[in-house]
Length: 377
Image (tube, rainbow, N blue to C red):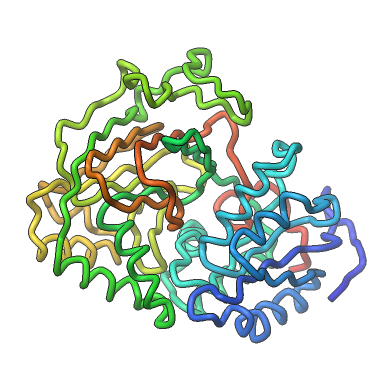
């Protein structure tokens, strides 16, 4: 579709939106969602767009790494959280990353998890919805052209690799369910329920060391402790993994965990309000961990309560919640699964920090209105 450029305030109607669709996401119905919903919404809102269908893993990452972004006013992802993870990291791998990451990003739920889309919907203070109703809601927010900043979290792996995350870092139960349930992808979001029940049946305990920088203890940007060779967003709160954590960090005494979950947005899935107080750009890591000794019944009760965001009201002594600016996790168990934004990453020591010096990508949502709506009402 196409439309002429019409000034409105200080913003012009975009000359083009790149829509990226992963045809394999969720139950493989993303193309049908585009044809049945998204194309019509964008056309009726007079938003010109071009459809790109990804053909392989990291296709979107490669595409945005080399794309001429001056041709596009926004990148819209119709998929689960995995495709947005590719896009964000592709943008950060560009020579002009500082400018590229300012490209407005829109998320439309087309996968199994859809956690960021659910978070965007939540920040708009809308009533909880799921499935195609969530797609309609996020499409409506997108077409209104409201823009909000989104935190970008720098994650360092033991190999020295660096990733950029917008959603979560998980180890233990949550990561196990996420990866092990992929075999049930054809049943959509129900895969997580089935995966949870299967993992509860044989609950694992993981040994590891956890440390974090409490939000109230953050040092100023002058105390840079880690200046890696790649100068994109220096990790000023982190010491190298081979060195002890800084003295103002908190060392968690427990060494046996059922799960460690660092949330950067409100939702872990469409119907899992993991961090009810989180906001898109609050500069916080919402750190949850569950220690060994919790019963299967209590753990199941926590996840049921998470559907309404009331898990912290359960009074469970094994569940701990802390607000942090940075963290370090060192697994001592030889085998395990670790995920970033739901994507499996190398297993081993890892640390992360919020880049408060730079708010990261902007998301087309209704949390904070930074620009007047560029599209006609």
